[in-house]
Structures are given as structure tokens and as C-alpha cells.
Image 1 (tube, rainbow, N blue to C red):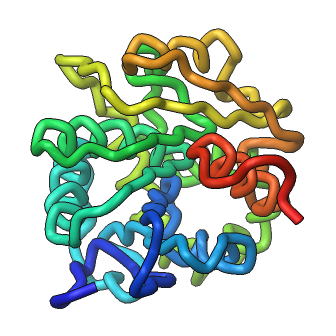
Image 2 (image 1 turned 180 degrees about the vertical axis):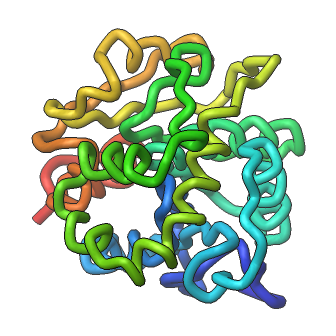
Length: 252
């Protein structure tokens, strides 16, 4: 990959003869490191990049961006600076909304993604109204723990709570205030990944992603809750590879 990489993108792996580039967009409060475990399960000829939003990890001292449309525009510019080649977008939760928005921008620029995967989030026109970013700290953290009980230790620590809460609140504001006035249909397929125990996204909402693509979405259910992919990265990646026609049959 020639030139200096944008701070918006963390290169987790790149090769000289990669067949495709998988770009992952994290959830609210998440960072690029969330997708590092995928390296152990992704074939070596697939480049893996993860978006790094400002205000976390190596970008901790940068100002948060509280507008999802602005985030999508900046991410798109970073991706447009990369060499051309087959591109897959995978977004989880808030990242799913961004994957769609970035997909729209890329297609407008004439370099659309080959495939867009949206995980654990309804399409924008079916997203329920909420204002947790305006509520007190306890309400915001309670919503996170409802989705991810494993995070209890993190939010029980006063120092870590003070450190990470501004990032979380900013991301919640970005997704909760995102109400695009125009809903473009992607030429690329949109596939939906859901967890059976995730009460935040219904099957009916998942089917509504069909309104935003020229292709009927494939909807795949996985065991687990909102953060199902933490427990089973290998089946998730296996599914992505099958859906992109990279993989035929079972993964050995």
C-alpha cells in the first residue's frame, strides 16, 4: 500500500497480492483493535483494515465527531486515497449505519464496494428514536451493559469510566441524531447479520434493509446477544467469505 495511511484507517494486515480488502467499522465506543482477533481466521490474501474514529487509542487526544454524516464523509475520503481494488465493508452496530453511508459516498465517487455487511443494526428509516446521549451517565452505561454484560468491570472502574464515557456519549449522539433526508439504494449487495438474542434489532427491521439495495439481502442469524461476534469470529468470517464467493463449501 503506497503512501502514508490515513489516521482514519488502521492497517491490521496488507499483502502485495491481496485478492480483496475488508474494511471493518466498529460499534459505538469501539475502536479499530476490536477487529484484531479476525486476523487469526481471515485468509492471508485478504487485507484487513479497521476504521479508527477520533477520540480513542492512538487518536485519543483528537476531538470527537458527533455527526455520523461527517464521520462517513471523512472515512470515505480515507478509503478513496487507497489503491483501487475489490472492497468489502463490514460494520457492527453504529458501524453498520456508517458502512451503508460510506457505501453511498463511494458509489457516488464511482468506486463502490463489492459487498456491504451490516451487523446488529436496523436501517436508518427503521431506527427507533432515542436520546440516551442526553441522559445521565448511569442511563448511558446501563444501556451498554444491557447489550454487553462482559463490560461490567470496565464501567465499574471510576478512572476508566471517566476516560471512556465522553467517547461513548459522542458516538451515541452521532447515531441517535442521524436522520438522513435521502435514502439512496446501493448497487452493491447489503447482507445482514443478526444475533438471536439481540432484542435491539427485529427480523422485520432486518428485512427492511432491502429498501436500500438493488439486491435482496441475505439475512444470517447467529447465536448470542448484541456482541455475538466477539464469541464467534470464525463463523462470522466464514459467512463473509461464502457470501463474497471467495469461499466455496466448508472452511477446513
